[in-house]
Amino acid sequence: MRLSVLVDNVALTDRYFLAEPGLSIYLEDGETRLLFDAGYSGILVPNARKMGIDLLNVEEIVLSHGHLDHTWGLDALIRLHTEAILEGQRRVPPTFVAHPDAFLTRSCDGVGEIGCHLSVEELFRHGKVLLTTGPLWLTKNLVFLGEIERRFEFEQTPPIGYVYTPDGIRDDTVVDDTALACRTPEGLVVITGCSHSGICSIVEQAREVCGDDRILDVIGGFHLLNTPPRQMRGILDYFSEVQPAALHPCHCTDLAAKIALAKVANVRETGVGLTLEYGFG
Image 1 (cartoon, helix red, strand yellow):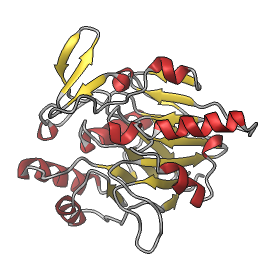
Image 2 (cartoon, one colour):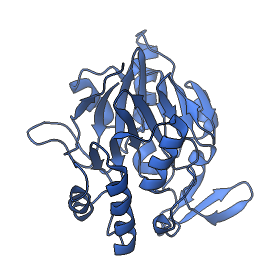
Image 3 (cartoon, rainbow, N blue to C red):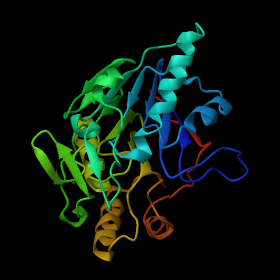
């Protein structure tokens, strides 16, 4: 598998890419091309172009959850496909994969919409839409983990605003938050969006779904911002036990959390422009 970071809060030093508070990761697994999240403003399009990545060939667009910093960049992708159709360019109609709650309206701190502002019906006009709460194998080695079982008490966090459902308004615990996992000969690579469901719970679900306890790498947002000491201790104890070969925390992970994680694991720099390759046997 080959992985490239298209959107992150920072770009790698001396790499002239655009950055923003958001996340988007491009993946190639054999002949399959996927996009995990779309960032906020659409900068994934020029960043991908500069990296030699053709987003019109992406077969599946997977959403980690419905927040704006992971979904509002879909507008730019839809414009890209629309212009390709008008110009007669070759394109692959994408399949959108997500948890069913990823398209609900959300509000927080007086902001009327912090969720995806595209509906399932609108996305259906541009490709297929596949909604699932369970794990879904996208390739022989790459799996969408589905709704994450929240296994650790120390990872329980307060709701983030409100979510508007057909049954009424409720506290938003971001139940749609999910991740990807890829099997490699050296262990699992876990690719996270924001880890609202808990980074340790996500890794545990990946180990369970894939039937492999070895963690080669975890890359993505860990949602560790001003983390309470008790939560941080639990996470550090967990990774001390799991012993991942590497961690690439980014996006919603602050410097203090990265420094703490570096005491128990091999934390590596992450940013727009980073490309990683993991082999298969």
